[in-house]
Image (cartoon, rainbow, N blue to C red; front, side, top):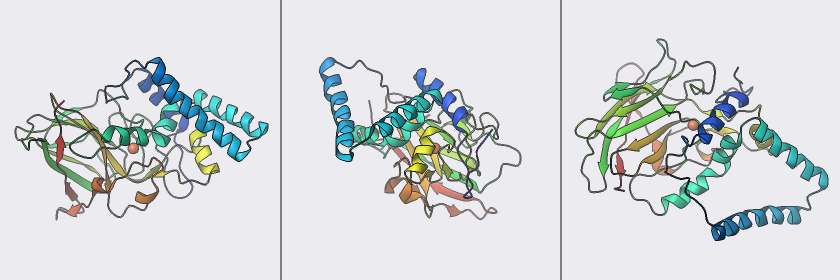
Length: 291
Ligand SMILES: [Fe+2]
């Protein structure tokens, strides 16, 4: 079952479906494409967790939080856990800061957050590739093409471009019931010159699920639950650091109010008509650094 936002758009999925799938993915470590999971020592734990707790204590002190509000907070935390929304909440409200810290020591193309909707085991395709889609897949035909190079400027033959995005209604396959499994997802292998070409459909903006605690909190606070339309990408090559990024579209009404704070100026595409019906194309090269 999916949730349609009454204001004209769509949710990525319903909270229960998205939550259970994203939680299972995170539990298995598949959602962490950055090679994390390393042990944390006592001093680091005390410093980071101590700072986080002090931030919450300061919010309590400064805002004179009441017992009723503290109890509501406890119930909300339990609901986040019960619905499996921890990956969603953390990826929407905190991941962008982790990504910005990581980016301080990285060269190459600009990255941004992974989010909770990546799935392993998708179609393996050679460039030029058309992503798996329904016969009547709605939406503007989109071509994304470019070259994957190292920071030395050399093309990376056989680089992988793992891409996933919503359909024209804002739904992710694997997290909403409407699109079939694997829809608009694939891992495309670039050619011997590092060039890739992917044929798909332009994704629509979507809201985070509004029927779960993350969406309810967002709306209660009066914050926008919308994400601008975007393509998710993981770009990799042997011996190189995988880039986790997203590409957005010029003119999207939600570029400046992304609930996940993931947009960056370098990541905005300006697709141009190809002359083939209403098809549009954007070229975007990736530069990835050696490990
Ligand atoms: Fe997304």
